[in-house]
Image 1: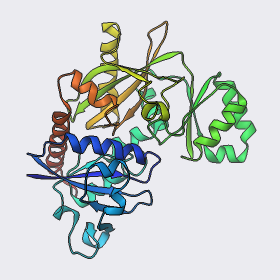
Image 2 (image 1 turned 90 degrees about the vertical axis):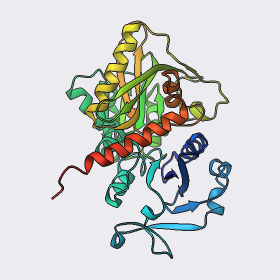
Image 3 (image 1 turned 30 degrees about the horizontal axis):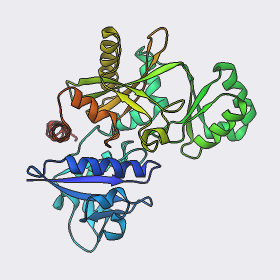
Length: 360
């Protein structure tokens, strides 16, 4: 039986979402094939082994019940259990990070697993880092002439030096409304829609709490469309779905805490040619950023013209009961437990494939 390390929590602003996703993943795992090992990361970055009820992961009780602490140990080439001469490889055969945002979805933990020689699910270091940085990803998409909306990238330092001058530059280039986002967050954390200078100032101040790199985008009159991609070297796209947000846009609160007011439509009510275009662009973008394993690709569809714009790639999309990614694959004929198993299979395949290449 494969010992499956499910990694959850983390140091990002998406900590709670990770707990929700991990709970759903653990419940869906085929216990006849996989032995789940719960590894939680606190907001402070402490790694804990947890062996209690799954229900206490989502409610946060796991931290009080966890007994074993983990720590990085460069001398041991990996991660060791404090007080015991064991590496993480003595505990798990495969790592499945269910972490959202920085220190989990951005290539950092993927690099750690590479150094520790542990196979893991999802994108590698490059794909994770490139997709996490919305500004960098858009530059890559633009070079390959994928359709993207007008945007502007800023650094916190620019705003600190001369806030008013930067605001003026933004207003010359982008009409209101303007969406302001931290470059390296997900789940709509830190995102605001600004309709005037006062709201833009507040939006920038909020986004700067999460990242020093910011991205500002034109506010299109659009529908929010998503699809999933699965695979390593021959990726395939899932069904296409649409978000029907309860608010002006699909905010953090609307995604997870609006009591089901926001709706998901799968499959999306789209012309066949638009569905085809979305799926093709999704696979192309996935390959461009060297993604593997799985990801969700988000799009804007302009009302009136049906023009498609790629928005971003999420390399560890939400896996909660409300989340689009597993529902898109269920629509395609791949149920949740089989989706998890496929992600694990792809991770092992990538691990074995990388062994054939020389590093010295």
